[in-house]
Length: 236
Image 1 (spheres, helix red, strand yellow):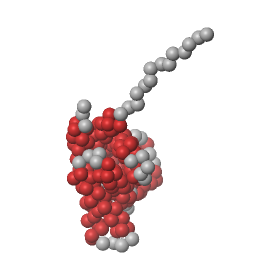
Image 2 (cartoon, rainbow, N blue to C red):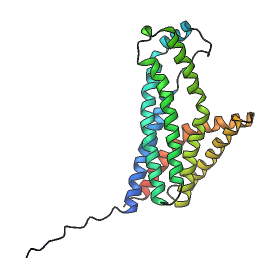
Image 3 (cartoon, rainbow, N blue to C red):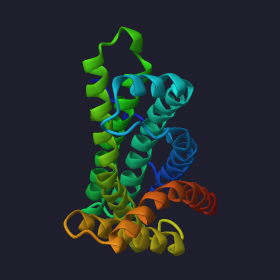
Image 4 (cartoon, one colour):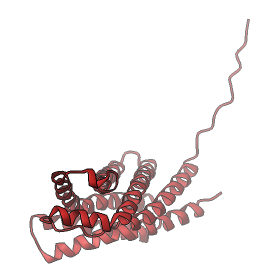
């Protein structure tokens, strides 16, 4: 008769350890996103009715900047995907039954999709040899690039969903400092209110859109610092 010896049991990962790991990933992704975003500021393109010669001159004089924009856009997209996954993971660990984790993923997913389109338009100018592209295609690409600028309206809504959902969940579960949570909630509310400007044009909503747009530049930096501090306080 043979006897079977059970192998050693594998202890589950403690929630505190998992939270610290999530905060570390989120902090790294947030600071990477903050740095990469500064390289995505593209030079203003010619007007929508610009001629082919003007478009080609613009691309020729802005080649280096457009190459930087495309490279930074890809890096920012990767950092955004990692950050979104980390934030949603923190929310789901703290509140498994909450819909806020799904909303965090939704906001980050929409923002990633928009950024993919915008970065794709930039890549159109830097990947091919423009001298070999016919005039009709150049004009079509230029017209499509203006669509990318219009997506800025939706980008503010998407980033507000991401900030707002995580901030509410983090406030409830005490994941990070309360001041940071409240800041995210306020910025998200302002950004979401700007969507009303699409149906009710008003300087108030235009201002709200600008606040939401530039808040997203500052939020990743504050997030990286806040997450790093929260992780350090959970050490041991």
